[in-house]
View 1 (tube, rainbow, N blue to C red):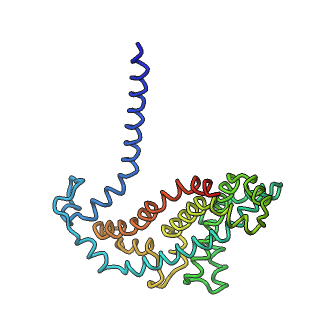
View 2 (view 1 turned 180 degrees about the vertical axis):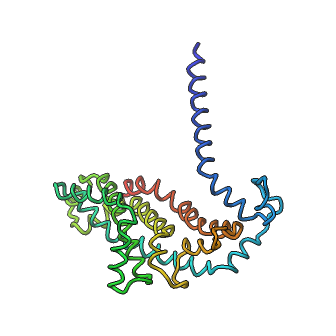
View 3 (view 1 turned 90 degrees about the vertical axis):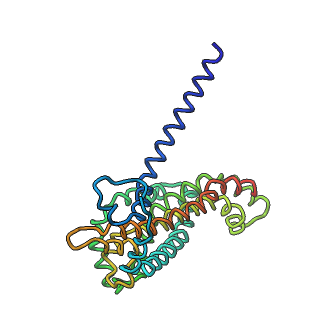
Length: 282
C-alpha cells in the first residue's frame, strides 16, 4: 500500500514531462520545418509527399537568396533600427516606470491604464495620421522616422513591463540605503539599478525583437530599396501572382530568425539569474 502514492507521483510527473515535450515540439515545429525546407532541392519542394529530412541537402537556396535580394543590406538596416529603438525605449521607459511605481496616486493608475489600453489600438487605425505627421516632418522614407515609430510603438509595453519590475523591488531597500547616507542618485545607481537589470534586459530584448520583426510600418514608410528592412525584403521572394520562390524564401527566413534565437540564448541566463544576483550583491 505504501508504494501507491509513490507510483502516483511518478506517473503524474511522467505525464507532466510528456505534456511539456509535446508542447515544446509544437512550438519548435515551424522552425524545424523551415530548417528542413531551406536545405531541400527544388524537386523535393515540388514533391507530392513532403519529407521531414532532405534527401540531398544543398546550400543552393542560400546562394540563390543572396543573389536575388540584398539580404545583408536589409539585415544591417534591421539591426540598426532594432538596436537604436531598443536603447531609446529603455532610456525613456526606465525613469517613467520608476515614477509610476513609486508614486501611488490616481494619475499614476490612470497612466498605467492608458498604457495598457493603447496596446489594443489596431495598426490600421493609426497608420494614416502617422504617415501624414511624418510626411509633414519630412521623415517618410527615413530610418530616423522608422526608429521613432518603433520607439513609440514599443514604449507602452516596455513601460508596463518595467513598472512591474520596479514594484517588485522593495522600497525598504532604498530606504535602508538612504539611512546609510546614500543620496537619491547613488541609491538608484548602486541599489535599484542592479535589481532592475533582469527587467531592463528582458524589456530591451522585447523591444529589439519587436522592431526586428516589424513589417507593416516599414512597408508603408520606407520606399528606397537600400533602406528597407529584412521583413520587407522577404516579401520580394513572392511573385507577382503570389507564387513563392519557396526554397530561397525559406533560406532567407531562416537567416532572419537566427539572430533573435541566438540573442535570447545568450541573454536568457542573465534574465533568469540576474534578479537573485542583484539581491545578493545589495
